[in-house]
Length: 173
Image 1: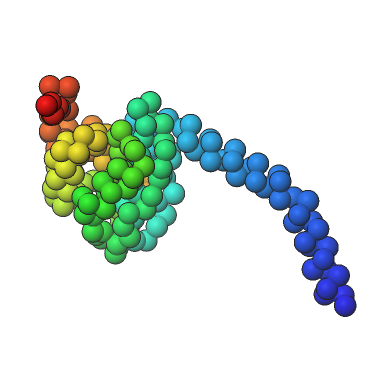
Image 2 (image 1 turned 90 degrees about the vertical axis):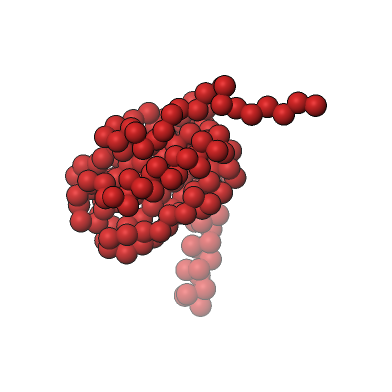
């Protein structure tokens, strides 16, 4: 009897708080959607939570035309020193979310954000695919213990030539 009364009281409390919780969730979602990501420092501020993980996690940030975050998704969880990232996984998410550009983010559990040879190779490969599907690979940011490395800043040659209107293919009849 006492437990049943407690359950009824909890349900009433929950029912009273539900509208507030729903409004709060909408506000949080809108705040995330309105967040602009303009630099490697913005990425680090947003994804610094990755620095405490003991396995590599690869996060994809999808952006709209005004560099506002529209979707964030973990696309791979790896081991202490590697994670598998396939272009189809990256761009499936990007295309499904109608992204204009994407930023790839991953952590180095060692705490050292220096890119490995594999990080550089994967970035170059993803940049080529991004160009083919007309989605800008804005950056690849590696999160370390208390710092980050923006490959766009440190290795711009990996990203190839920027896509231009003249590189677009128009079909006519």
